Image (cartoon, rainbow, N blue to C red; front, side, top):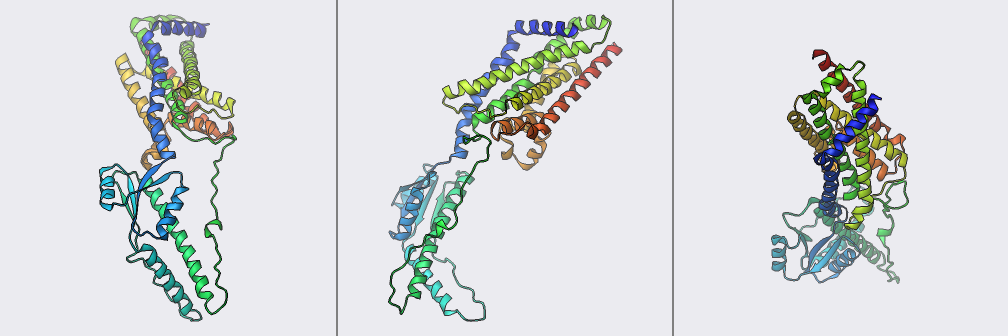
Length: 423
């Protein structure tokens, strides 16, 4: 009965505290919407990068045409013709365009000549026992890429690798042509066979997921579970505030004078705010499913393991409530509790990958992030939402969350009893 009475008391205190209600329900809702909108462009920019590249073909020969044809099929790079090289450089330097490709005059002819010399040297050395190193240096043969100093490194890598692949394919094609020409000398066969070396090995991308549709980590899939956990850990504000207020007003002292264990008081508070955390979770999930598409964002995909999601939410709620109780019983004043609690939750959230995904952090922070309970919960949710993980697969994270909750709850009870004895 003490537990139920404590739950009822905490409920009355919460609904009368409009500021506290806004803090634990309205603030997280606004926060997740704002963060999802802000981070939507960077997530799309990272995953669906599109780059407009200026293209100056001074060569006016087959190499430039083949490069242009190859990039026409690439969905993430668009070539824009600009014959004025000086103007092209000004555009890139000013940041209007992030990159430019220049094919110098005579590049195709020089490449053909080098290919011819290479094959001729190869046939000239056939039958010799000593190994011969072929001089295939590209001195004087360059295709230039100009980059804006502010361009992202991944853009540079995509463009450079794409251009090198196209040129390598052209070189292979011309080497085969030259081989056929020199092999057919002195014969009546003059027809060259067309061989597409690019089709010998193809790379097919598959995204592993238990669901049929293709899922990607976007701003909604990251921010909804991340900021939901952030909001759940901020339950310490009303919890600690009410707990310390009762202690200062003497309510806690009157409860201590009642015979019996003080555990039901702690258990009642824990149970009530545990339920509040679950209510926060359901509200935020509803925002991800129904509100995000209205704002032009992706809809939150929950995966196919409903039991795992509910279990993870319960474990996170236990960890958040246990941490809030520990802060409440440890500090003597609301200022101390709320100041330390807010800063510590922000630090745990930053290290746990709430603000930015862990994989983009420096290596040292990635190692530290594995000690944050918010990282445990976020990893479990991502595994469930995107990878279709089974409940067994997320058990390590859930065990750590429950362990954290048990340790903080036990410490809260111990500190509360210690102060009762002292007083």
